Amino acid sequence: MNYYIYTKGNEEFVDKVLKNSIVEGRAVERIEINDMESLILHEDDHLVVTGKVYDIKNVMKFAYEKQVSLGIIPFPEQKELIATFALPSKVDASIELALKKCEKQIDLLFCDEVLVLQEVVIGEVPPLDSYSSSMEKQSLWERTKSFFSILKKVRHLKHTSFTITTAKEKVLKFSAIGAVGVEYNNRTFASKLIANYLKFNDARLSLVVLSPSSVLQYMGYIFQSHILKQTPELLPKSVGYVHSHSLYIETKTEQKITVDSQCCMKTPVTLETKAEALRLSVGEEFWAKSSKVKEIKESVKVSHLSSDDEMSTYLGKSIPLFTHASKEQFTALFTNLREESQLNSTFMTLLILATMIATFGLYINSASVIIGAMLLAPLMQPIVGVSMGLLRQDVSLLSSGTKSVGVGVLAVLFTAMIIALLLPIEPLTSEMNGRLSPTILDLFVAIISGVAAAYAKSNEKIIGSLAGVAIAVALVPPIAVAGVGLGWGEWSMFSSAFLLFITNLVGIILAASLTFLMLGFSPVSVAKKGIFYAMTLVAVVSVPLYISFSKMKHDIEVQKTLGKFEETIGGKVIHLRNIDIQGKEVRCEVIASDILSKEEKKKLNLLISDEVGNDVKVLVSFWYEL
Image (cartoon, rainbow, N blue to C red; front, side, top):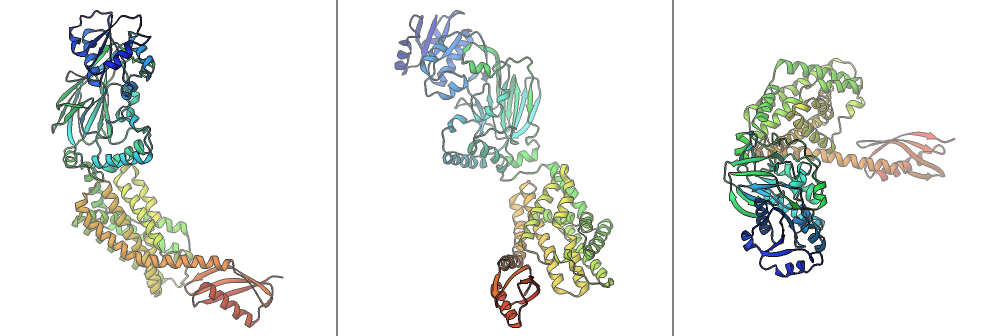
């Protein structure tokens, strides 16, 4: 016997179903849901239901208790229900499937004996509890608005401590803002993240845990899922999961629990899967996505989530913009920085040796020798310590780092000056000259190097990359050039080279401080004072650098203009090549079709000066075409 169970108010839809040609000739009795309990059922009876999710769940639980089969005829607008069980979207096809008895059985998920059809949400889990299908037809603008609305919501959520006991008595402890329990792949964002683990017959429920340690950390996943409409291949760092037959979930602060969009209880709670509990007529695609499971195992991935008490307390206030470093990370980094910021004989010996190598490398114009000096010099280490001391307002670390940097710089200047005084030659090599014109571009290099230095320092796996940072930013060579300038009595040489070092110094300090802040080694309230000081120094240094950059830009434009120079003076065709601009001097080669007279040379001088636009001295060498 077939019984068609419906809810009051849906009579019109029910009448259409019963008048359908597919139903004709079959024994189908219509039953209002309030009269369902009075039914006397036999094992071969079959139920069919139409109604809201809450009503369908009641009928599913009734069918489970009575051990009879069930079919669902959904309303066309119940798209999530249709997608979850792969039901036909057309009414005729859904009627035919619903009336067909199914011998295969699916698992059912219960939350404290309340049947869960789609999902059970513990706490807050935006956007894991929403359906990805709702975004399929949305425009980019609508998805962008959704992206920012979720970000605002995440920023004001708070963590709490979770303690979960699995069916095999494994106790899991971590900090999170919420979790989503699912049984089937129902096209929510949560189920899409673990789609490969969702089976209809593995006697396991799946709990997806949301534990963002910073807004920035979670922003990447939301951007990918909402703006790009993509599901990440790897689980986001802010998400974990547990697969088990049953879970007992406790939280430090009471969390509300929503079952299928209805708030009905609070933690603690038990989630449990009833294995092969219901014969439900579902689409073939549902079975295809859930191959038979040979062996049932618990699966857990929450070890990467925040777990220690300090983190739980910190995140329990609000989710910060930047990640907060754990106590272990903080202790390890600070111990290392304090040791490396100390002024000792090893530091001074290596620094003086590096200075000697760098100075001789500058004299012989050897880039490879200078690179060797960069690798040997330990000056980067206390500078990184200074950036952390400034960020954390740690007077001890800041003073020891500043002392090491200050004494080290004086030692480099003195060593290079002594070498310059002792050597009887004064060659201004290209390696020296290359460090006499710092621009704003050098500040950009220093800032990027500072980011790399701080990141490498905070991660033991890539700490060897500091050698590359030392080469990129080149701290000792510009100080050595400044020392040589002192030895030669060239104040402009000293000031230009020392400006390059100051540029590197303040750029590294600012960038390293900001990087440590983003990595969670200081709260913003403590860091803002140090960041302000570092930004002020960078702003001051940027003024001469920008002026130098503007001059370099002007010189390049002049070189391009003179490179296109072609004039006829006294019937002689003239053009220029190998143009070099040094201050108020323009040096170039003049290619002429014949020898120029004195008057013609004066006219050429005026033409070149007009092109440059300044009162310059023009120095040329003449080449004549035969």
